[in-house]
Image (cartoon, rainbow, N blue to C red; front, side):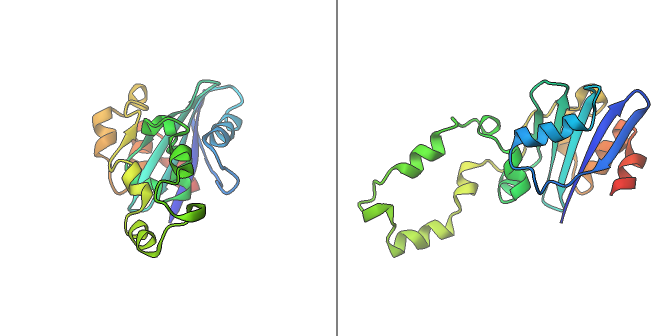
Length: 178
């Protein structure tokens, strides 16, 4: 089960809104959604969580590039919402690496088709797990100036988003959209 919310910092404190990510396909789409939540270009946090699996924090400050933290990249890679956050830059890959490797036909099969043994082997070892590290990735200092240290962020577990909201003084507003 997934949960996603926007927390926008305003002059009056934090405002939370439940958000639907069905129309979000890229990190750029997600950043635009966050910017719409704060017309004054204040800080907006996008909080995403897959229950028991992983959580992500995307911070958008005005027109600056989004800052991202994902608690478990390998778990997030198996999620459509997680894939939005796991950009090539975040994972330290060159943007065209995956496309170049997919285009190569070095196994001798015709038309790039794998034989039955290779197809079975490929099914046993998901590409996402081999290309994506297990554990946290991104900017662990994304919330440092808001009162959540890198150490605290990395130690969060089960109810991470609520713990983050409590540290920000926004637990009540987050609870209203949960």
